[in-house]
Image (cartoon, rainbow, N blue to C red):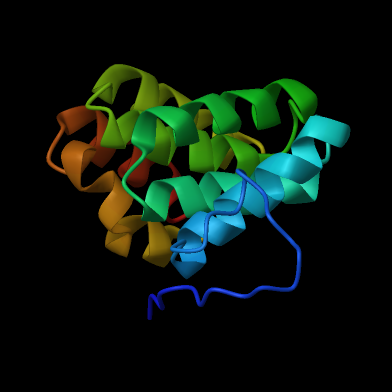
Length: 138
């Protein structure tokens, strides 16, 4: 649940953390600050990508997911998350191609793939159904 910040006169003032940040905004700012010091921190990139998507900032989340795939080209989860970002941006072809790559790399949670709302934009695409048919029972 979002909470409004409280004013504190403890001497800490920062334009990065305005007093009225909700929890998501605080966490986005916090993790962005970590990435300014260590831009390839994979665990932080994963969390930030998730937060940005939850905030509806799909274009920003897509940038993070692309970066993760470039840092971890054989990471099935990174590819899966990138496929979800492409789907949210209505880039169906790239989403399905990237989802196929995630499965080829070992992502096997087909039940989750079928239920994940991020993939709703591609779910009725014949290429999605073909991908599921090709791999689900392997």
